[in-house]
Image (cartoon, rainbow, N blue to C red; front, top):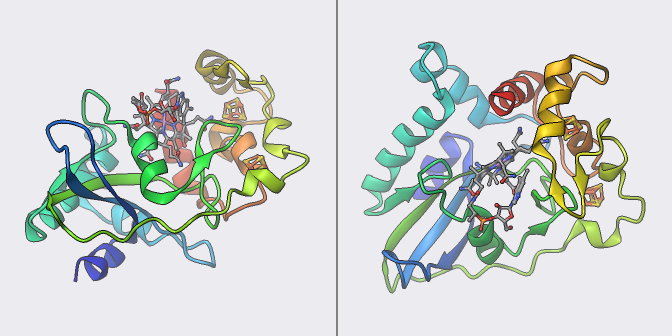
Length: 213
Ligand code: B12
Ligand code: SF4
Ligand code: SF4
């Protein structure tokens, strides 16, 4: 039932873990993420685009849409939803690694064996203690066999290094309007990865504008 409801919104269960952090220590939690179809169709984006939040002109439409549908989903499933945009930020990537077996790419983003660098997370649904878990299957790590690492060759300002992601250089480039025009094309580094099918153009522009602030 829960899986069907998530699928209607273009979402799916990426995996489960038992939380160790207060106030949910010992509780089972399910990671909910976007599902990208084989043909690149992204149902979540289609459902969101048709929503009131996408059209009302108010700030943070995707966060507000996510909260509305996931709060309702959580309440039907007798669970509590935790969001990536809650404050203080919940450690989504740390929890996601435990729940899915995904590992970080050289860009810092976790890479999914099928969806590549395009796996976004929407919420954790936290259930009661003692809920039976689907333990994460061992996931393959695509970066291990990627010799050329094209993701590290395409950024015009070399924003990725051993010191992490240089947010300032990236934002300056986005604001400059210089080629390559990442604002409309999307992040060139992310797009260079051969794993997974990139989002549609409208979705890329939405996320780049949100990121540039
Ligand atoms: C703040 C934030 C940012 C800041 C990062 C500032 C900084 N240097 O710390 C900014 C605004 C720059 C950013 C950018 C992006 N982000 Co961001 N971000 C977050 C957010 C909301 C909080 C991160 C945090 O501090 N967590 C708290 C710590 C305690 O959590 P943690 O899991 O233990 O910590 C891990 C991360 O902090 C990570 N990390 C450290 N530095 C950086 C830098 C980047 C760029 C990323 C992605 C991760 C990362 O390393 C830690 C251990 O693995 C998370 C959601 C969340 N709640 O985690 C999304 C999140 C990490 N972001 C995400 C994404 C996808 C992006 C973008 C690609 C979005 C886009 N534009 O399309 C960009 C990357 C830029 C690009 N070139 O494309 C995804 C990553 C999904 C994945 N597969 O891993 C998350 C999980 C949001 C989501 N809803 O799925 N992000
Ligand atoms: S290009 Fe290669 S190293 Fe970079 S994220 Fe993709 S698989 Fe990993
Ligand atoms: S958006 Fe452009 S400038 Fe920013 S990290 Fe990606 S490739 Fe580099």
